[in-house]
Structures are given as structure tokens and as C-alpha cells.
Length: 98
Picture (spheres, rainbow, N blue to C red):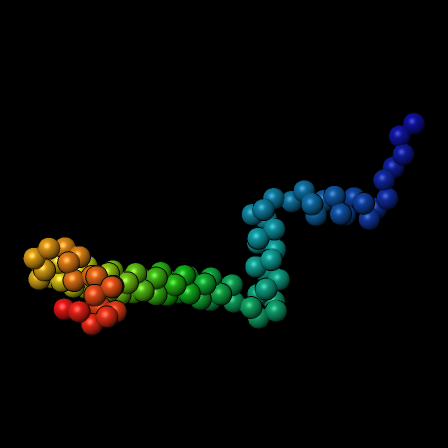
């Protein structure tokens, strides 16, 4: 024989079965009653995301500029020597031989 569920279980089950769209509408209505502007909050989140993207772009641009300058300096230093690594002799540098 089937037994009837309690009323509170039916209410909980009905809340769990509502669609996401309807749940979002109910949350928006509730936030509106509390004075929370969900559109302003969404706009602020979008602005924060855009600012994060801009900061990332700026940092990567500066890093690439530094990397390019360092590569250019190394290339110029490499052009100034007759034989590569000929000036790097730690024994001669240690005892002052030239």
C-alpha cells in the first residue's frame, strides 16, 4: 500500500523541480525587493572582467618589449666580438692576465 508523503516534502520537491530560468526570475524578483540591482551587478562584473583583460594585455606587452630589448642587446654584443666567447676566460680574469 502506498503512503502519502508529508506536505513539507512536496514543497521541497516542487522547489527543486522548477526550471533554472524560473529560479533566476524568482531570484531577480527577490533581489529587486531587497533593492539589489542585478543589472548593475552584472555590468560591474563585466567591467571587472574587461579591466582584467586590459591589465593582462598591458603586462604581456611590457614583458615582450623587455624581451625584445634584451635580445637586441645580446645580438649587438655578439656582433662586437671576433670569436664568440673569447672574452670569457675565468682563469685569466681571476689572475689579471690580459
